[in-house]
Length: 59
Image (cartoon, rainbow, N blue to C red):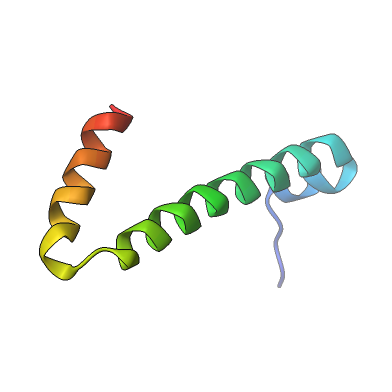
């Protein structure tokens, strides 16, 4: 038996909710991609400091 949650059915019937969730997912992916690109561009010795500095900045 297949059971769906109410959250899924709400987004199917509410395109604005789906649009907002899609925008949030894209924004989150964009932030991650930017962070990961910056992280990978650094030498391994500087990566930990980069993560710690980013965590301090985001708080």
